[in-house]
Image (cartoon, rainbow, N blue to C red):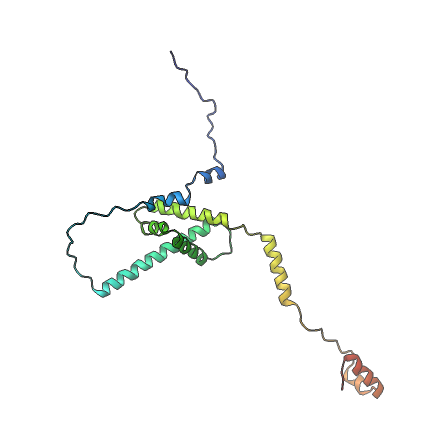
Length: 193
């Protein structure tokens, strides 16, 4: 029996919308799933003799590792900030979110430690974490923020004392007043004996 040949009549490529594209990205949990497998303990080999490291060299190595880790955390925080979009939150806030996520899910720490072996996987995890943060954060309403800032500014600049009354009487007019006119003027400006 001969088979029918199918010919596609729509040669134009289809475009995937941003919502569909985001839906195709793996979730953070699925990206971290590989880190929850129990590790097989390596077979014990005869311990090799390693030359002792001097304290100065060890100290230098520790500082270097800390510097590299801090730089990687800073880069990941900047990536998170970019994926969230326009926000008033600082890069330190995003670093804090990385630390918080790591304390809640130890697989994230393991993925961070293995970032050099598989950088694309680490970047995918950071991107997925950024998408989660983006959905948690409400977009900034510029008009509402502007009106709140205007109210705050007007409250700060408001006067807390009554305005001073302008003195329409100069020294010469005071000098020429009678006692009764002077007493009436004192009452008018609120002077009491």
